[in-house]
Image 1 (tube, rainbow, N blue to C red):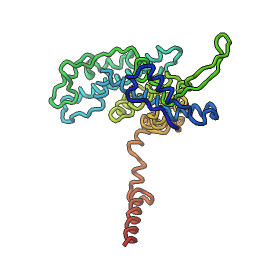
Image 2: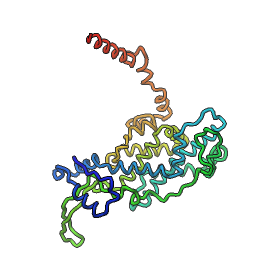
Image 3: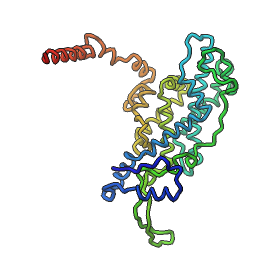
Image 4: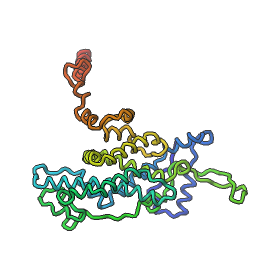
Length: 351
């Protein structure tokens, strides 16, 4: 179905020009009147890109928080293994960085939920476990010896080729942010590309019958707050499973057992409601995140297999050991020989 494409100079257009463009280009999809409520919901879910735009904007928003960006860079950057003198400092920074990543995302979700009227916090258990970890003094035992203080200069780590070497006066600083406010984001004034106008009749507060034009968009079926909460949560899981960050998350789960339980429960919860609460295409599925963080299938969670056993099985990769054995009757080696034989036969036939 055709969708409305906004012009490149949309932000420079006046309100009158925007209204004129919208009325001329917004079109009702064919067969709309024959669709039931679920089909209309699915239409916007499959064709609207508002959820993807919000996801990308939240990603950009997080990366503009200095404290978050520094922590993310530390976790994603390799370091010189020959610099054994600074390995303890690097390990300490990675511990501090992963805690910063978790707490920043949790704090943003909490602040946004707190400022929305009637909006429940979608990650309350995760947030509580983070704060409990700090309040019970888990950090104090290692803070002075292994961890950099929040105000310590990362640039004090010497080394000409040190990847953590920052500008002379840069710090691993505190960052106070009120919360993510959608009305201040660039996309807020842009219409949904699948939206359209249609005549509608309704009853006024004085019980008079009124008619006029009604705008039908993705927000008719799922509100903006749902899209934003989903954007934060999908960003959280995608960041947690990135190379370099995933290993630190797994270490954090081992140290903070309560956080691991809350994280697992959250993934299971979203496996049941993901079709109604998450609309961005960046969501890879609850099964994917569960397997990446807990090394098993989400459908076998009720078996309560210890995560250490599942992780060991994953790292040993039994499937590869069996399929990769040269004497396996249906293994990779046997399949490779069959493919080579087939190619040679085709080559001989051409002669």
